[in-house]
Amino acid sequence: MNIATLILVSCFASVAFSYPDIISRSDWGAQSASKYIPNLNHPVEYAVIHHTASQSCSTIDDCKEYIKNTQADHIESSTIGSDIAYNFLVDENGNVYEGRGWNKVGYHAGVWKINKNSIGIAVIGNFMTEEPSTEAQDAVQSLLEMAVDEGKLKSNYKLRGHRDVKSTACPGDKFYDRIKLWPHFYF
Image 1 (cartoon, one colour):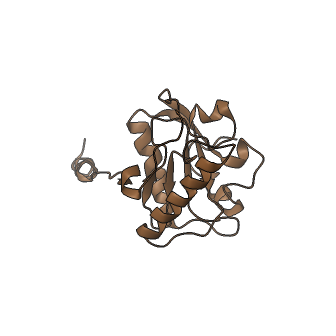
Image 2: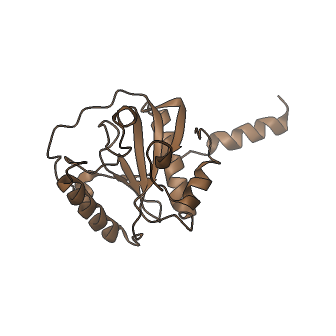
Image 3: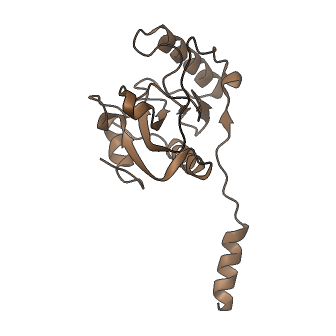
């Protein structure tokens, strides 16, 4: 190895990659699940990306309130029931919120076979005509890397948009066009 290579390797070795801090269920005021939710068997094969098809929230407090209301709606829903559907949610500032978390089967894809073999990540907002912020996209990608490194998601996982597994416009046209360019995208 020459001196330039050693310096380059040394520089990269000193840069520590940082995963996103995850705002826990207790920190956003989650209710307990109303019914038993089965555990995921790790590592799962798929990551399914969503948007909430709603307004974005601009502060952590607003986002916590939005997520609490979403959870209440999902619990009251006859189809979703028991808890918030997603494993994680991300706001436009790049904050990550624990939904069902790493270890519980989500109800985000509408297809049991996919739900029990995937992590569902929703970005808060409507991304039909514009992409989520760079901060939100970076947070989603960092969360995916974290999932792989922690053995929650296979290293050769398949990334899909919600529309790839169910008839829906989710995760929005602009966001879908963007995730098709991400590593691991699979249609």
